[in-house]
Amino acid sequence: MKKAYLHIGVEKTGTSTIQSFLAKNRGALEQQGFLYPEAPGKLNHIGLTILASDNRDQFYDLLPFGRVTPDADLNLYPAQMLMELNDEVRKSACHTVVFSNEHLSSRIRAAKAITLLRDTLLSIADAVEVIVYLRRQDEALLSEYSTSVKNGNTKRFALQPHHLIKYNYADLLDRWSAVFGREHMDIRLFEREAFENGDLINDFLQAIRCPHGEAFKRVPPQNVSLDVVCLEYLRRLNKYLPAFVDKRRNMERGYIHAQLAAISIGEKPQLGSEEADEILNQFEASNRDVATRYLNRQDGRLFATSPERSLKNNLVVSDEDMAFKVGAALWRRMRRVR
Image (cartoon, rainbow, N blue to C red; front, side, top):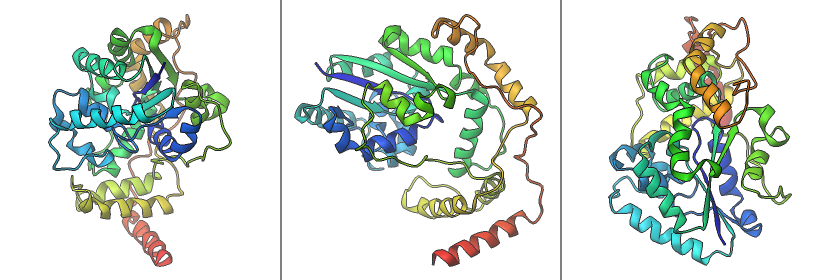
């Protein structure tokens, strides 16, 4: 009997770190009986999201993360991917298949699409368990902002209407549990206090019932945020160095971000405590609903932590010499690298 675990995110909950760990340890995992297949994507299983979507054109921005070329016909891709996936699973002696793609939680919303995904996975495995991590919304939004700047965003941080939909965890869980069944949903909190032994990877291994083995190679945290000065520098620079869909044309952006990360040792971005409270107030009813209905917490409290008091928003950097200071640091860094 084969079992499958489907990790759907949510975004900004260490998904890149989890996926990097799974990909780096494919061999060690297989020795334990766990297959992390390559057919839907070598690192990130974007192929599952493309498969389930009824509007595949919206995924061209994600193609570099999967085994899909930019000129691929996304209407023909799912059948080929499934054929390769079935062949990969059939040849494997593993008792468990692990899938991971955070875009499933954010971009796949229709019951029909989720049902298609469930039926596809049940043709591969006898049972499917869904794993989802939830993060406090103010922290998730700040992390999302940092990633958006890395990807070319030029706008300042602001709560947008679509965020109220994306981070409504009660609606998200209701959609997926309606198809997979509440008993097949493993809901976890993205808080160090909630992790197994305070470690995200240990927590995920526990979720998939995989023993912690010494053979596993650890990976450093992925997508670490820039400090607030470098982040603001990059946001302003994006106006003159736009992002491109073409992976090769984006290499220069990736290089600059890597160099900024290397000199990024200052204060991390933070929201003001009042601003964080205002964001959480928008999700208070949803979070209470999740805590009581899904986690059986009578006090209605979903997250153990709260925004720190008396913090001020530091995202607006007013230093007129900022560009020169960062530019000088980059220059010294690149001279050392060279």
